[in-house]
Length: 182
Image (cartoon, rainbow, N blue to C red; front, side):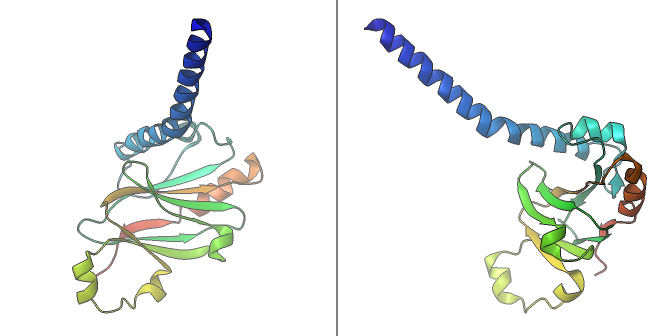
């Protein structure tokens, strides 16, 4: 009977460790990757990652992938991301500085490859009652409000093969990420 007890206890511990590993390690790994990006010297502007840097930050993705990143801070001013992407599969993911997903958009959801996303500080409930409707959403495309001022916008494009990668990287490099004009 004592053997059965210890076998059941060991099995329970193994299941618990496995569940915690599956639930928490991916989020911690993403948080570490985002911290590395936010401390990089290229932080603060839109950057298309070189193949080596991309492999270090996103090792699970194919080598043909093209990544563009933009660190943002909406504490003082809104940030507008303008993109004119080539046709094909792409994803825009916006994360907080801790790796929590704020917003995700892909080519099928957007219905267009040319768009803008306005990142803005979330207004308090009191401010929401005081403000009138924001009419600039038509020119911005999408508006993402965040209660955390700093974060990272990550574009991921998947070319058909390595021969298309330079052309896709060149197109992604035309993306801008800058403070909004008033």
